[in-house]
Image (tube, rainbow, N blue to C red):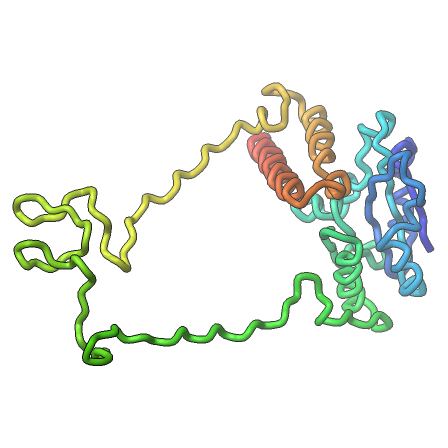
Length: 286
């Protein structure tokens, strides 16, 4: 069974909660971006279509579609569901709002985050389902996204001794590079500068095998959470929460799926920044 709800529906939150409360057995809840230019309905897209074809006998689905319209921009049914399922765990609540949540008899059993493609999502969803239902086989571990066969250990490079007129030199004899002695017969690396007392000056090259020790990078300064969320200091909690949800929705994985991978990384970084800012405000309010 597949059901599709839309953000533009004023009762979308209540309908979603009703599906969760009434569902018996395994239920998948997930959100998708669905604008007017998309020809296929949400339930016909992957991984939802494959889940219905292969595991529809044990799994029901509720797909919540965000049309990206102004009518539904202030609604966040999946965020509300996450808060309801995990009232004391903001990270899990956010994972519900941005990924796939598997419930059994209305209780959350697993949350699967969204990956780069529906095919990858399908592998991890099947893995989670196999742990919840004996009738779902585990996916092939060899086809796990990102899985690579172990590479053979690199071969050691051949050793070559220094060539000389009389043949190869013994490996235990010390060698000096050309120019390794100065005019006074003192050993040193070519190009090293020395002062009158023979001490190395500050502009010389460090010996081979050593690196100049650099100081650790300074800790980045914490950003003002009010500035990160783009709201005035002292904004009432309900208004601040609405602003947070609107902002976090802009970086939803579905909304950057069509962009290059580097934009996915930026979106994840920005999402983490927004979440940290909201958590900081909630700590201060508490």
